[in-house]
Amino acid sequence: MTLNCIIIDDEPLARELIRSYVEQTPVLRLTGTFESAAEAIRTVVSGDIDVIFLDINMPMLNGIDFAGVVPSKTRIIFITAYEQYALQGFRVNALDYLLKPVSYPEFMKAVGKAVEWVNMRRSLEKSANGASEYITVKADYRLVQISMDRILYIEVQNDRVIFCRKDGDPVTSLMSMKELEEILPSERFMRVHRSFIVNLANIEIVERQRIVFGNTYIPVSDSKKEEFFARFTHHKV
Image 1 (cartoon, helix red, strand yellow):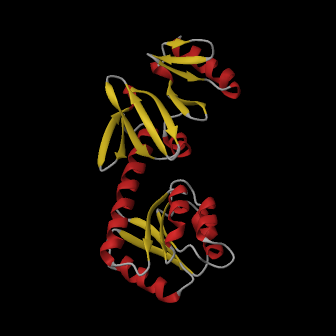
Image 2: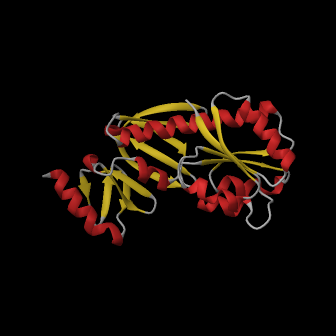
Image 3: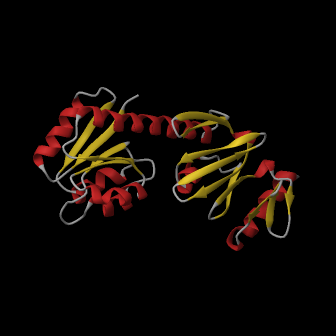
């Protein structure tokens, strides 16, 4: 596995330090370095970047604001001298938050998180393309393989998603609903509410615009009602 990465930092010495770390790390391929976030926008939105090593306190466009244009498949590792931005950093799907000066062991620990993330993302993409009947997600410090047939529904809670399964404990993973929508097979799964995706094949009871799984009632939003009932009826024919 090789991860495409870029470095964005307005401090030359900081850029060169991270460049030297990247060059020592076989799993990383450096595709560009930038003095500002504005210079990097075109490269980032191309969608070919796996990891961004990103400073926060930069002129014109800071790292937190820049994170809003980063594609969901790309992950950020913040490298900054200011620890007060840590909470904001993790709210924008950052894999890690490193304080300058960064040591190589700290850098490698963050790279390890990136490798786990990309492994999980590629596994989900294979599932979406019909290459696998399983998805692999990171749950705490474990990688959990989940059969798509056993998924009843998926619930989002802040920056985490909960996979609720047939005959199995729920699995919680750090991921966004948007990412799941992009990679789950759309013919099998549907987002019926801002907080829920359901497996259409596993729905048995619908009651008063709610999907029933045992003691759990999942609302179907008004904007999704027509599409849901059409697809649900089609699956049951």
